[in-house]
Structures are given as C-alpha cells and as structure tokens.
Length: 323
Image (cartoon, rainbow, N blue to C red):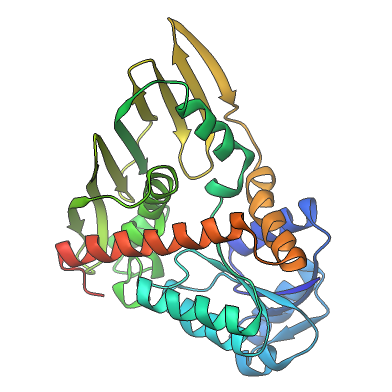
C-alpha cells in the first residue's frame, strides 16, 4: 500500500517513522500549502511527489491511503475529500469536532468501501488488552481517576501576544480536543457510555480551554477525568478495585502500567516503550484493516471514537465552548 500525508509537523514525522518500523506501507506523496515546505518535506522523507493543491492530490492515483495531521478545523473537509476520491483515511484526533459529522464520514467510507480511522494510540496497543485483563482481576471497580496534564511548549507564545493553532478556538483546538480526549478515550473504551456527565472548564484569553475536569457516572462506578495544557502533572492515573489497584503512568501511550495487589507491585507494561512501538500499533492496525476489511476490532474502534465525540460534545455544551 502507498500512503500520502497532509501536514509536515513533528507528529507527521513520528507517524512516518512508526509506519516504516511496523508496516510495509510506502510513502508516495506529501502535501503542504507551501511549495517550499512540501518539496523539503518530500525530499527529507523520501516521497516522490509533493502537492500544494489538495484537490489535485486527492485525484491522484499515486497512492491508496492518506494520513491527515492538519489543524483540527480542517480534518472533516479533508477526510471527506479523500474518501470521495476513494482513498483510505487515517486521521489524527479528533477526526471531526462532532459525533454527527463523524457519523456522516463513516457512512461515506462504508459506501466507498474504504477504511476511515482515527489515529489514537492507546486502544490499538497490546497494553490495552493487558489492562483489560488486569481489571478483571482486581475485584469490583467503583472508582477510577484518569488524568493527562502536560504543560504545552506553545503556552509561552500566548505571553508574547501570539495565538498558536493549539490555543485558537477557530482551529477547533484547546485542551479538551487535544489531550482531554486521551483519558476520555480510555474511559469510553473500558467502560462504555456513561449515564451522566458532569464537567467544568477553564478558558484562556483566546477563548480556547486551558484545562478541565469531568465526572462520568456509571451504575456503581464513578470515573473522574482531569486534563490541562497549562500545568504539568506527575501523578499516575488509577483504577481502584476492592482486590487491587492498577496505576498508569501515561494514559496516552498506555505505558507504565503496574498492578498493586497483596502488598506487592508487579509491572505489567514498562514505561520506556518507544514512540515507534506505540504509534506502530495503530499504523499496523490500519494497514491490516485496509488489507483484510472491516473486523470486530475495527467496529469497536469506530464505536469508541463515536462515543468519545458524544462525550466531548456534551462537555462543550455544558461549558459554553465557542465551537
């Protein structure tokens, strides 16, 4: 399979590294609005073609699939364009801003017989299965705390009067849509649809959210979520059972998973897995689905992604987000 990329940022480079390390997918083309950036990125990454016209790129028969890593606000329209031209789409999260928009694109993908998939690391790694099995061994779980608080390298730009894309609501960005989705994803994948959502958000002068918290209530279970792009946390996430506790260092990567039980600690997943190891799992899953077709695992990924959009829709509604 041949793939093209939309976006020339660091995340695109990381994904291409993961693709090379875990699949036989070949890079055929790249896109940037800038001719200079497009050519430089193509030469750096070994692509034979580069484009500055997205419509011309979508119409090209030089590749079968596309990886989209553009700003959030562009994901929906770009994914639709490539699906309409018969390309498989692997899109960075969030694939769309709303559940309604995502449902429409999944329907288009199925109509075209193509794979439309969100690039999310956690649920595709072997660590997710290890975590599921470990939860089954810690008794009744009534309390879960999942957090991802990472001080953004772009935060200082705000104090210089700049508005980086990640803090620009016009780009459908901010803390919730960038890193809040990681704890939400894990909660949705492990526990399904909550019966009730309570949430709060703090906003920056740009109108984007800086940090937030949510409580997802289930029958007999409360999951609390914390996320921030303006502060750094070093505390692990926890899944508390009456016969043991699971701690997770990184909910985005599902690394550093430990089982604390009977007075001892057992490491289930190390904390030093490489980015290729983690991102490679999602790249491999995408390649397998393109080759073999829709599977129960693909359907699970689809339903989880749609549920995450549903939850973020409600959090935005409760807190008056500007988009």
